[in-house]
Length: 294
Image (cartoon, rainbow, N blue to C red; front, side, top):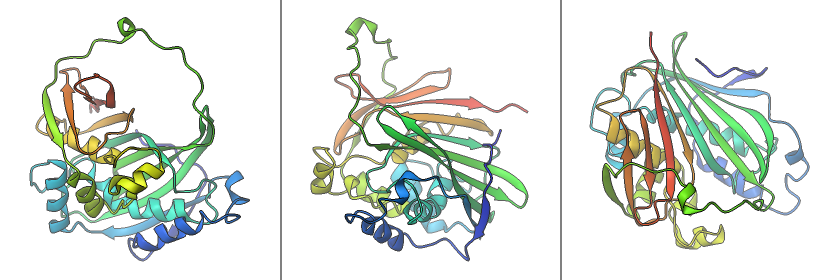
C-alpha cells in the first residue's frame, strides 16, 4: 500500500541538491521577522523529483558500517531515506514552507519495502509534504519520500515531524504497576559519540544537536543525541537476516538517545522491537515489522 498523494505539481531537479544551501536557508529563516508571515500558511503544493539516482558503493559501504548492516548488494531498508534526505531538506528549508526547519522533532517514521532493492538499480526519487495538522504541543506534518524503478514504486518512507509551539500538557502519572512488561534484552549496545558524527557524514543530516554538546544544550539536551534514523537503522540491522522480502516497518521515537550511552535492544518473534534505557526501562524507540503477503 502506498501513501495517498494530495494534489501536487512535480518540480524536476537536474540532480540531488547539496545540503549546504538548504542549511544556510534554514539559518536565515531564524532571523527576527524573516519568514514569520508564511509560517501560518499551507504546505507547498510541490513534489520535488530527481530521476536516475545511482548508489555510490563507497557511500553504501560507509553507511552499512555506521549502522551495523552487513555489506551486500541489496540496499538496507533505511538507505533510500538517506538518498532522499537532501530533497526533503530542500523542501522544508524553502521560504514558503509554513514551519521553520530548525527545531523540528522527528517523532515517527514508516517505511514500506515493496521488494528488495539492488544497489545497481537507478532510482527515481520524489519528496512532498502532506497533512499539516494541530498537535497538543504544536503542529505536525508528514514528509513522504518515494523511490521508483521505472513505473514501479519499490520503496516509500513517511517521516512525521513535530514543531513544538506549546508546553507539554499535564498528564496523569502512571504507577509502575501500570507499565506493560517488556521482554528481556536481546542485546546491549554501547553507543559512542562517534555515532553522531559518523551518521551525519553518511546521511547529510548535520544538525548540530547530534554532534555538538553546546548546540545540544541550546535545545535543552545535556549532551548530543543520536539521530532517530540511525536508531531505526541499527535495530533493523540486528534483524536483517530475519526480515521478509516485502514489509512495512513503523517506529515511534519516544525519548532522545544521549551520546554516549548503553542501550538495551529487545525483539520478539511477533515482529516488535525497541531500544530501552537498561536501568530505567524507558523506551527510546518502539517499532513493529508487518510482512506484506502476496
